[in-house]
Length: 138
Image (cartoon, rainbow, N blue to C red; front, side, top):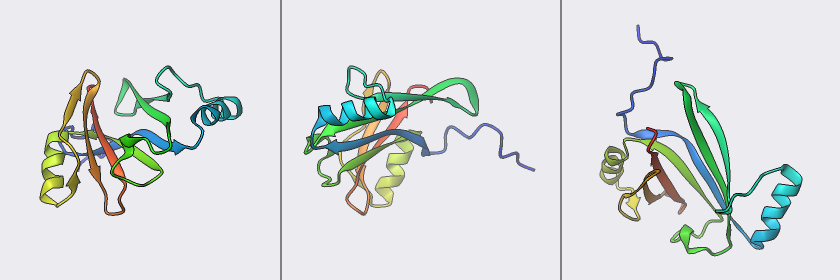
């Protein structure tokens, strides 16, 4: 009998969590100030806040979720016309992209690699731009 509490297979291309929540603001500084004053969200030098959590399958691993308002109309959300964008943490990004292409999903760019992980952007059927991120800790 398979134990579903064992570590998940890290080779299966899939979403493993949410890596970030991004949204437009009409007045960026007022929005940041409001969230800091009223909800205690501290904004870092990149204009975002990082919420840390532990990976249940690897308790020594610390994961983070990025929260960040963007100036309304910021091109980073393009071509989406929506007011928000979600970043999903994924594992095995290369294989996931192959599956997405086979399924006819709109891929907006190529995989970009940085010190902190790999990224690619896709569109869903409702016109939402989605950021997929494979952190270096995977």
